[in-house]
Length: 208
Image 1 (cartoon, rainbow, N blue to C red):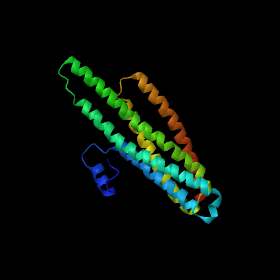
Image 2: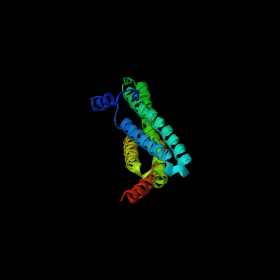
Image 3: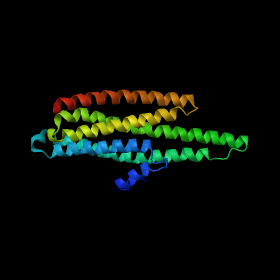
Image 4: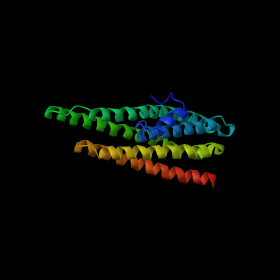
């Protein structure tokens, strides 16, 4: 939906009065850009003669970053689709009690999907943050600033995705579903916060 647009066109779409693409899509793309920089760091390291001992590891990590980037690009589109499905549900007729009930069910189901997508985005980003912790001390110091930017882009995407989950959770009626999502979100946040803390500390020690 969006990945074939030019950067300029996409930014124009984001800046327009249209509700999509919105924050969830941009959060996923922030993670995708971060993944790209992490892959770049790996490949710059892998081709360096000084880093022959970690060449295989870096090549594998670069490929993993590519896979996560592609997943995040798909989630960027999925976020917009999920939002549009919620809007469609709100447009359903509500003249009779039967129609009202069907409309309520449709809104709830669409809203649940709109909650699951940013959670998937957050979950996809966490391994990238954890990769940085492992890769930073082993990689090419000349590209450490690129890794730092990649890490922060990933974390920004993570924070944005979490915000979207929380906002959508507040609209849901199914308490069992809400508790399940909240538990998953808590676990993901704990991993992310630990990784970003360690990543920032590690990179700071390398550039100071």
